[in-house]
Length: 106
Image 1 (tube, rainbow, N blue to C red):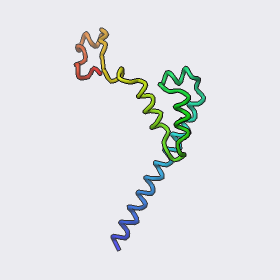
Image 2 (cartoon, helix red, strand yellow; image 1 turned 30 degrees about the vertical axis):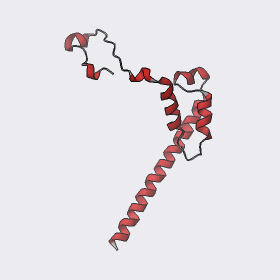
Image 3 (cartoon, rainbow, N blue to C red; image 1 turned 135 degrees about the vertical axis):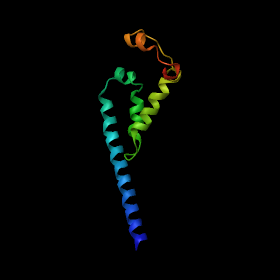
Image 4 (cartoon, rainbow, N blue to C red; image 1 turned 90 degrees about the horizontal axis):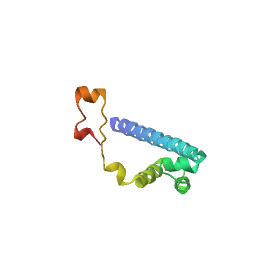
């Protein structure tokens, strides 16, 4: 009997997790539709264009469009974000405590 109870609990937990994921995906789809209200210049500022939105909306309703949109924006940013340079600006705290170590400068 305890094995049956454990199975029922495990099934209920998995169903709850699945439902939460589905609701999160629907919310992300709704939020992504708000991007269509932005003009092309604003979309370009975040690294997207209209075709990216069309591709994200063409996916099935249970899929998460934010994955595709985030991937497209990251592709357009390209290597310039990952090169990691740090500009040291003199401030009161840098005069008191010194500059950031190079390992923290990304």
